[in-house]
Length: 416
Image (cartoon, rainbow, N blue to C red; front, side):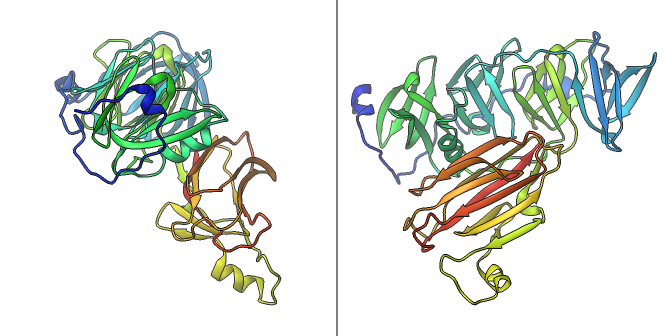
């Protein structure tokens, strides 16, 4: 096998490969822990220590009390001296009113079911991926269930590039290198293993040990199929988001037992729960009706604005995406229950790069995200809404005409 040094690797320019090959360990099945007890019907509540909470129901009411337990389909709250049983289908959320957010580890892992987990330690080998959330039991999952691993904390200098790369579907794995000037360089190949200091990566048949301290992260290839409507979402005090198919009580033990998917379970300490949401935490923008839409041509014309907008204004593509020509804007009402707005933008697949353009996102008329797209690389955003009531998407022509100025908004969405 041909070997090259790490220094030689980092001096290489970007390499693109079209070779296909099987991914090591991606299809290897993993044993699941405690499988038998997870399949048993649960009818007994879990009694827990005092935890002050506020619960919001689907009819808009708020109930303050103490979290007293949970069953397979009911939440137990002690309020006004009595225990109330609240069916899950009547709940929106439960929030811990007495917790202090903790400093999260730098490394985070995104799973295919929509979970995002901060981990202190991480290992990838033939047995799968071992994740170690802080002050929780370790979690082992198959590699095929992992969407990406990011070794660095979120930062404004690199978030747009990282979010763009991690939200675009690729057939091959991607090694994302941090270059000088906060530039991210994507190399495609096959991820073989990960330890404390290095990533073992196959780059065009050459095996490379890439130092983690020079990486932004790893993105696993395959179909971008993320469950946007989990039954339950739990946010813990470290900021991890656990997307669940089911909450399950235990047999008298304090940690909350949770089911992430058909094969993956975890235990979560009650004192680490910051918030539980029972309703869908995602709303796709493509499914919403805009409050305003506009298209302006670069050159003046006598054609009726309504006719121009019909032919060249923003359009829906598929179930989740939007297509904008340069000079287009769309505005939507923003439900205050949604706390974030996220998505990815990229040049149109057939337009090429022929002119300047800028994509703006505005909240209540103020620009909160602006990105020029001088190339075909995607850029992403994940913005706090901060109570805004309207969001506007805008593609600015850049002053040099509108030829080739087509933008795709990939999966723009509101997040609770």
